[in-house]
Every structure is written in C-alpha cells, then in structure tokens.
Length: 197
Image (tube, rainbow, N blue to C red; front, top):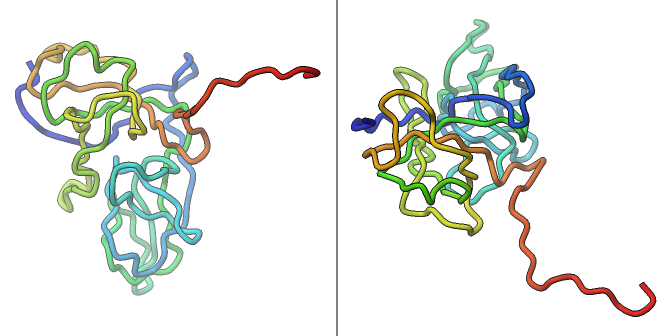
C-alpha cells in the first residue's frame, strides 16, 4: 500500500510504443542568474532561448530536467539541480525532450480506476529539495478529467504495494502539453463536407 506521500517529480519509465528506453536527453542553455531553482524531474519550458522551470499548471513544456553543468568562478560544476540566481558561464541543462517518453509520478491523494485514460494536472510543480536535487512535483488527484490538463494517465504503476485506492498511488503519465507534440486537440464543431469538396 502506497501510504507515504514522497513526491519525486517525473521519473522516466519507458518509451511509448515499445521502443527501447534510452532516457536520452539533450542540452539546453540556462541563462546566467536565472532566478528559480530547477530540479531533476521537474518539467521545463523554453523562454527567450533558455530553459526555465514551469511555474504553474497549464504551461507548454519542452521536457523534463535531468541535471545541469556550468562554470562558476572558473570551476566546472555538475549538479542534480540548478541553484537559482547562480552567476555562471556555459550553463546547460539536460532535458529529456522526447514527446513519447512515459514517466512515473505520485498522486497527491487516492485515485480510482477512472484516472486511467484521463488527464491530471501537476501539483506543487515548483517544489523540490536542494539536498537531493529532486523535484517535489506530484499529480493533483483533485483535477482528474478530460480538460486541458498537463498529464495523460497511461496506467497505474505495476509494482508491489501500489494499487488503486492507495493513499498516494503512483501512476504512469505522458506530457499532454509538450511543445513538440500537443496531445490535447480541441474541436468546437465537427468538420463537415461541402458540395464540390
């Protein structure tokens, strides 16, 4: 039974469609002095050519942060998180940017079978630990639905002690609002054929 709330952000699980899970990442620049911490497992977006942490649910993301490297006072550093406000050169973050990547995230409350196939928003998307470098983002169980939400729920994680109805169920998700592959399509009216078409 998942009785402990221990959010860990988005942890890569597999590639949708049976492809090997390489957990491949690409480098994206981080602006020197960027104010907010960026944690491993936290969704990020591109702003003025640099990556920044998502600050609220509903923002389009380029992927999930996996650590960084930068030069500070002439010393090369590697960290599991970007320390906000750092004055650095050659700062880059490693981002899993494959829109077909599947992740594990912990819900912040119990979820039912109806969560599978539905969407869910991030909870505490900006939280994290400077000790572990891990994000504290979770899935907001109170938001489950079909609207414009951050994550598509694929299934409940199949592991001992994790079942539907647990206090804090772990679920597999994909990024709905990925900048390269939006999974949400909104149609206000069905397309119709006209004469001559």
